[in-house]
Length: 251
Image (cartoon, rainbow, N blue to C red):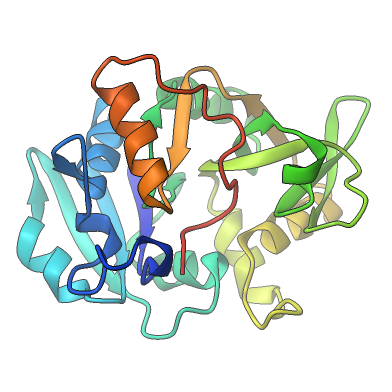
């Protein structure tokens, strides 16, 4: 099975660590962020990863070349950073069939194989890892609209969140994803949002389902996030990391 790992952002909130290297090569617990991501994907049986690169992308290519252990690596370039949906679209020509999307700055331990099996069993267009957060956090990113336990829509940064259920940056999609991405328009902030493609799938009657986070996941955007993720990886108490920024890779 294939995966797409968006890793094109500049990581401005991690400067000066990202002044001369891409965010994906910043170390957490002694290893680059992307190494942790690749290990998680490999453990779930992924054998082909498309890495979307942009800022200092050559550094990532030079570091990993074309393989990570026994996993094949291909690179797609996102020359303009126009949102997570735009990044995933850049990889569209390299994948076929079901695909995992794992944001390239998410470090953690989640049951990805269960997410993959769930999509296959239900034939959903999208199976999404989600978590419950506080209402303040829910207003800062994408939030699912839920009716009787089913996803009926997605809204970005709502003033009054219709729920506190958010995506956590790990998704499994059927090939319907790329058709939806081709038809979305830029958002108010001028970006192509992956959540808009999910919302379009819902509007057209496709099955979109959620699986609650069972484990831990840290979206690494700041030095505090590095410390929190490192503590978890080193076996320390750390934090549950439920209220991390939920959507997309950093700029």
